[in-house]
Amino acid sequence: MLAEEIKSVAELMDRDTPIAVLTGAGISAESGVPTFRGEGGLWRQFRAEDLATPEAFQRDSKLVWEWYDWRRGLMAKVKPNPGHQTLARWEARFPEFALITQNIDGLHAQAGSKRIIELHGNIWKTRCLAEGQVSDNNDVPLKEIPPRCPSCGAMLRPHVVWFGESLDADELDRAFAASRRCRLMFVVGTSAVVHPAASLPVIAAQAGALVIEINPDPTPLTAEADFSFRGKAGDILPLLDQQLMKISRD
Ligand code: OAD
Image (cartoon, rainbow, N blue to C red; front, side, top):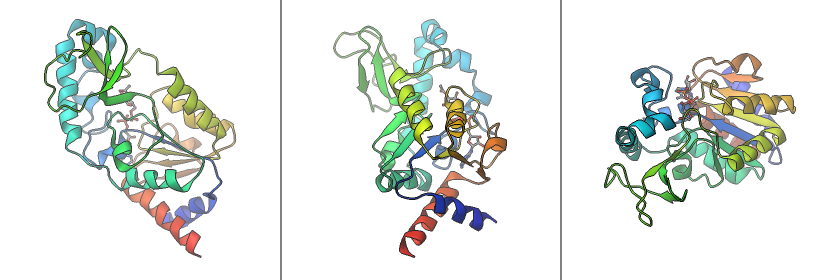
């Protein structure tokens, strides 16, 4: 049954097929990055309104930065897994391939993906509160908390999207365009409850794409998906890749 479904999906993946992939925290779970909502998820341990809102940052920027510093420490220790690696290979294989992620951990880039639409920002980037300038910052731990802008001395914030904030308009436009254009949309490791990311597969489906979900657990999207692989990203994506290799050899 699984083998047959893998074969059916791989057969749809011609080289000229426009493909979009939406990833969430689940793809990094096998690398050791905690998810948000499942067992051991961050939002079971912490309250988002205390740590991941503009109001929380205004109230206690030190506390918020300490939390991000802790998460950066966790993320610095982990490596991309076969799920990330497969998607990096697909970017090179398919001329029309869009990788849209809700993750801020930078693991797709570390796996070799080059064109990544980062809907929720990147934990390895800071933004100056005075000038808005975005910079890379890989210090673990941070040299000072809260960190300050090297050029103007103003406080920096994590370059991530918090609850109640808008997503970057350019990134979102690119994500919408890729979702409307694709013929196949893979939805990997997301609980599909946070919008606007969760509406991208719906947009793709309305534009005629087939939706393929990869997740060990069902989500609100499962009933709408054309294929639903109930498994781990690090298992299913490599199986699809192996099948693609087999087809191209036959
Ligand atoms: P969630 O924690 O909500 O969901 C993670 C999903 O991954 C769940 O559906 C799990 O079943 C699934 N999962 C777990 N292990 C997996 C594996 N090995 N392979 C595949 N799937 C697996 O994370 P997101 O959907 O990414 O937003 O959450 C969306 C947003 O909510 C995040 O980007 C973050 C959070 O609040 C912001 O920080 C703005």
